[in-house]
Image (cartoon, rainbow, N blue to C red):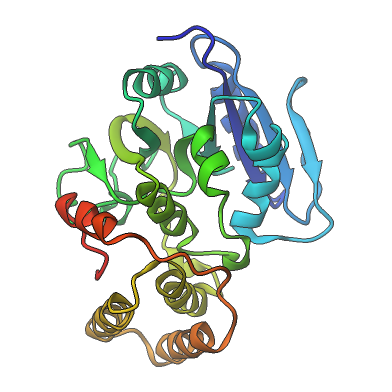
Length: 294
C-alpha cells in the first residue's frame, strides 16, 4: 500500500435525511489510515449540519444523481485529480467496517488495471444483499467477489485517473443507468471493474420503483445508453432483449405506459455524444460474463 494514496468521498443529498447523513459521515471519519476528505453536495436543497472539516456545496436546482456527483468530483479539482480515489456513497448508507478506505487503497495500488470497485450493499438489520445489488448475471452468491461489467452508483470507489481519461457521469441521464454508461466507457479505455463482497455499505432494503420517474427514466436511459455506446448492429439487439424482459416481468398498466413513453423519448431526444465501444470491448464484456446485449 502506498501511504500517499489519497481518498476522497462524494455524497449528494436532498437534505431530507439528516440523521442518516450524519451517521454516514461519522462512518467515513472512522476509516482507518489517512483522513478521507468529504464533499457533501446539496442537490437543489440546503445541506443539513455536518461535522467540522466536511466541505459542502449547495446547488440552486436538482441536477439529478449523475449531475450532483459530477459537481462533487470537480470539487476535488478537474476530474477529481486532487485525490487518487473517490468514494461515491448514498446519503442513507453507512460504511459497515472501518477498513473500507484502506482496502480500496490496497486494491488500487496492487492492480494498475483496476479502475472501479463496486461495494456490496447489505440491509443493516438482516445483512441480506438483494440480488439486484450484485452487478453480474450470476448473482445468487453475493459473497463471491469477481470482475464485473458495471457497478452500484451509491456504493463504489473510482480511480480518478479513469474520470480524467473518459470523463464523468452522463449528467443528462438524471437518474438510472449512469453507472453503466461510465463503466462501459472505462472498460473500452482498458480499465477493469471489481465487485468486492468484503467492502460493505449498509443500506435499508428499498425498491427502485419508489421513485415516481423510475419506469420512464429506466426506459429512456436504456435507449440513450445503447445509442451512445454500442456498435450499430448491437443497438436493436440490446434494446429488443430489454423490451422482451420488460414484458415478461408483467409490469402494471401505468408502469408499462410510462416505460413505453420513456422508450419513445429515448429515440426522439438527443442522447449526448456517440462513442461506440470497440468490438474487442464487446468481446471483453462477453468474457466477463455479460455481453452487451443484456
